[in-house]
Structures are given as C-alpha cells and as structure tokens.
Image (cartoon, rainbow, N blue to C red; front, side, top):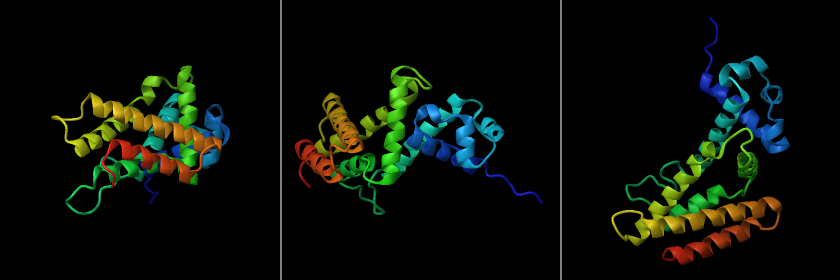
Length: 203
C-alpha cells in the first residue's frame, strides 16, 4: 500500500528550504532549482505545490511570520496556563524579545524578512501590500496591551496606536543593529526594558 503524502508537511519542507536559501544567499538565489536542491526534492514537485516563484516566495514569507508568532504564542503571547492573562508589560516584553534576533533561528528569520522588505521597496518579487499584514497585526497587538495597562477609553485609541508604532519602530532598529553587529542582545533587551519603563508601569 503506497504511503500517504502529508501535503502540509511537504509544503513546510519546501518553504523551510527556501528560508535557508534566502538566509544564506539572498532572495534572488531562491530559484526553483536552488530550493528543490536544498529540500532534496524535484523541481517539478516545487512547481506542483507553488505554481510559480511568486507563490513560493509569498508562502515562505508567511511561514516566517507564523514561525515568529509561534515564539510568543500566536494571538496570546506570553499567556500562561492559568485563567488570568499575564500583565501587559510581560506580554510586551515577550513579544519584543521574540522579535529580536537573539539566537540563530531568529537571526535567520530576521535576515529573510529584511530581504523581503528590501525587495518590496522596488516591487521586486513581492509588493509592499503583500507584506503589510504582519506589521499591522503587531501594531494591533501592542496597542491592545498598552490599552489594557492604561485602561483609557473604550479601546485602543490614537495614543496607544502611536505608542505601538514607537515600540515596533524601536524593535526594528534594534534588530538591524544586532544584525549589523552594532548592538548586543543584552543591550537590546536593556533598551526594551527602558522603553517599557516609559510606556507602562514598571514591573
């Protein structure tokens, strides 16, 4: 009896290979031939699952975002097993620590995302609109936690959203600094704590 193929697992195998190629050699190197060789599958199989290079790249970008979200628990980052949600400051620190390239996996993902963002600036391979969903979702998440801490108004308003933009812009700058070797992981976390001191009540 032939073995049943797990199509989701096969797609993950291919997007994982694409992530490795991009992290090592850049976005332009992510051809069907290179990705197929990295994954140990045929070019025809990559074409079967993704159709064209654009479909492969969009799926790979989504896989990186989902991997990053998984580090802080997806929709409920920092959530524990009990009924009480964790304090907003703990959630925000967990999110920011998960986003920073503090280990090999996060560093590779940061390099891949930087390659996508650079390509989107000139509409090469992907468009800005195709990458916009994840940053907007992060702004919503951070703004909601700031509103939880402050309890001001019926829901996250302009002040919370502007502060969320500030938090994520800081995280993006720290990420670039770590990748370039200008900032250590220890310093980046100290900056995160300093920023949170200004935005929420100290833990």
